[in-house]
Image (tube, rainbow, N blue to C red):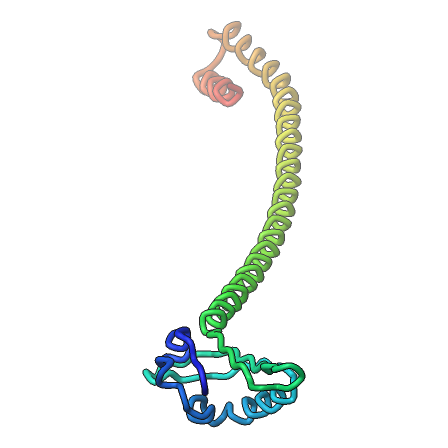
Length: 196
């Protein structure tokens, strides 16, 4: 590493002067080195390459870096490689948070759809129950009407003969008071009470 700017501290967690003169394999983890070496060779051949690596700061903090290795041209000749690093940790965390929120939203949406379906089913059952109740109410009104008609007819049919019978008994009771024995008078009283 021939040059390093002040942004190295924020991205790599190391002061620029600590990076000068170090080889790339001493800065980046060995697991990422095959990719970095391949990108470095491509840059030396004139082709830029971007890759993503996991990096651990000297403090132990883990970050995700986007590395761009681009050729530095001096005329037609590649004179060196420019390595730029960008910390993607915040971006990845936001992506993870967005993904988590999206999943929660999807789950909430599924729950709402299930609840809406259950509500529709409940409404259909309620409508059916209300229709059944209305049918029962109509039948009860019809039964009540039939009962009222029956009572009206029965009371008319019974009242006429009973009125005639009561009138006859009262006539006998008033017109024959001296001619009736005690037993006949008692029988006449019971008959009048029964008719009433």
